[in-house]
View (cartoon, rainbow, N blue to C red):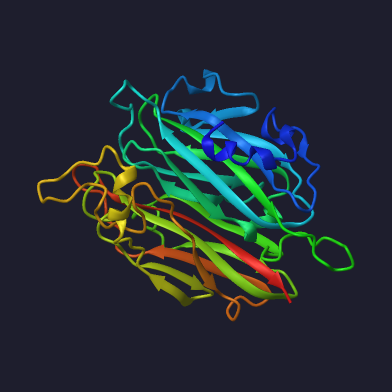
Length: 351
C-alpha cells in the first residue's frame, strides 16, 4: 500500500473494503470517521497481448490488451459523508537502477462504468515523463453514482510492457453529525440529485465528426431546478507535434440547436510540473519537453472538469445536446492526425 494510503489507514473504518474481491459492502462508518475504499493497489498497466492471463489481484480483470484494469466494488458511504475524493497514483515500472520501461507522458483516467450509458470519468490525467504522480479530484457531485455496486476502470494509454502501476481509492470524508434532530444528512450537501452520463470518447477525430457533431438525446427530470454540464477534454496528436496537442481548437457545446459554450482548452503553466518529469528532455529550441503549453493538459497533472451552468437552458423535458471540435487536424500522408479525448455528464439538482 502506498504512502498516501498509509497515512489514512488509521481512519479506515471498514478494512474489508480495502481488500478482497469487492463482493461485500464497505460498512461500519460512524459520523466522525473517514471511509477509504481501495479499488486498485499496485496494479500493473501494460500493453501486452498476453495481458488476459496476467496474474492480476483477486477481483481485478484486465482489458484493452492490459492497458485497462477493472474491478467492481460494493460501496456503502457513511451516513454523514460531507465530501467524496477520488485519488489515483501512477508509478512507472523500473527497468534498472537508473531507468524505467515507459519514460513517456501518457493519457490516463479512472472512470466509472454505468450500465446502458457512457462511462463517467472520475479523474482524468496525463502521466509525467517517467515520474510518479498522485492526483485528487473532488467527485462529491457524482454521489448518486458512487454507492452500491461500482464498476471502475483504470486506464493508461501506454504501448509498452511493462509500463505503469496504479493505486486508486475513493475517500468518503465525514464531519460532525449535523444537528438536525440528530439525523445525519446523506448524501453530501454538494451532491447532485441525479447524474446523466452523456459522452465518453477516447478519439474524436475528423472521421468521427464527418457526419456532424456528436449528438446526445437527454430528458431532464421533472422538478429539476439547476443543471450543470461536467465536461473533461484534452487535445492530442499521434506524432507528438503540431495540432491538436500544441495548437488548440474551439470546443463547442450546442443545446437544441443553440450554441451555449465555446472555448479553447489550453494550459500555459506546464513548467510548474518539471520536477515530477524526470525524463523530460531539452529540445533544440531550448525548451524542455514537459514545459510546452498544450491543449488543456500538462505532463504530470490532472485535467479538471469544465463546469457549465445550463440551468436556464435545460428545462425539464427532452433535449438534444451536441459536442463539436472545430478544425481537427486531418490524417496526413504519413497517417498522423489530431484527436481529442472527451467525456461529459449532466448534473442535476431538484428545486
